[in-house]
Amino acid sequence: MKKKIAVVALTGILAAGPAFASGYRIPEQSLNSTALSGAYAANTPAADASYYNPANMSWLDNTWQTEASLTWIHLSSVEYKDNTLASRNSGSRSEDFAMPNLHVVSPEYNQFRFGLSVVYPYGLSKRWDSAFPKTTAEEFTLKTYELNPTVSYKINNKLSIGGGVRAIYAAGVVKSNGTIPLPAPFNVTTISRDMDGDTTEYGYNLALTYRPIENLSLAATYRSKIDLDIEGDARLTSSINGASYSGGTSVSVPAPAVLTLATAYTCNSSKTTVEFTYDKTFWNAYDKLDFNYSANIVDALGVLQAAFDNPKAKSWSNSEAYRIGLTHKCTDRLTTMIGFAIDKTSVPDQTLGFELPDSDAKIYSLGARYQCSENLLLGLAYLYDEKESRTLTNAGGINGTFDNSAAQLVTAGLQYRF
Image (cartoon, rainbow, N blue to C red; front, side, top):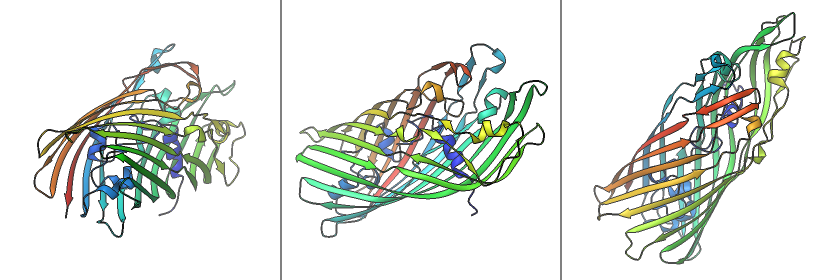
């Protein structure tokens, strides 16, 4: 497939991350993770350990472990109320997605275990139909697919290490279409951009789990920063003096590193496990957004350069999330889970826009899994992510309040071992 400017869509995500996680992450990539609000790194008893903590593959039952899940994601319409002009009041479109995942872990081979995960770690579709937000964010859509082969090595009964290679394919679309004011005699001009494409980039992940006593697990995982260096095509137009551009462009944006620290404790009855997880996403790597073009933009007044060419400061800060999950084995067959998380935004007021009406969030979740037979387990989980209202006062041309931003996730999962 011909490469185009996929990361324009991605930068829309990096500027417009998903409505249910810091930046553009989607932490929920399995049944258990959805049910536990992402408090899932120290205690990972299923095949999804290959993704969340490959070091824990060492302690899975010595069989082939598999999990397939499907997550439905609903993003609510984000409401915007302007403080000065009621005509600017608007709402984004609500969005629905289906996200399948697959995890596989091998039996043990001389203290080694091997895993493979196919996940969708980032993504968004944010679309506005009203004139004011359409000028910068008519559409920002990103889909990513990650292939993550992993390996673990059991050093002894208390310590295991793991890691893997991450291959991320990203495809997306970004569109803007609206009017901006100009000095007389022009007064206003209509500008637009239309970009789409794809890219594949690589990184790595590392993991370590230490079990000082039988019922206690201490874990640390790290996902590397991945620089998304894209070359592709862009189409820009303005209604003044035939200003336009159609040709090559390039941009580099970071998919930031993520550090996770977690601890899980199982009560002596072995029926209840509680896990605390801390995530730190290193969004400070995203300091600016700068597109480069392979030819000059035809634009005597510099309108397109100002809108789409000049570097845009982002100045994002590192974000933190605090998660707690509780797993209780009700019977030999039925296990229930609940979770809660506080997720801090990384986007400062001065660079927040319609591409990302982001804010701090509280996350609530629950779920259950049922052991149908010795080898087959089925489960269902639900998660609700509620964003706080956020008001900007003349920040980046926005003077108003974003409200009603939320996400709902439902995950159905099947685990099978043989």
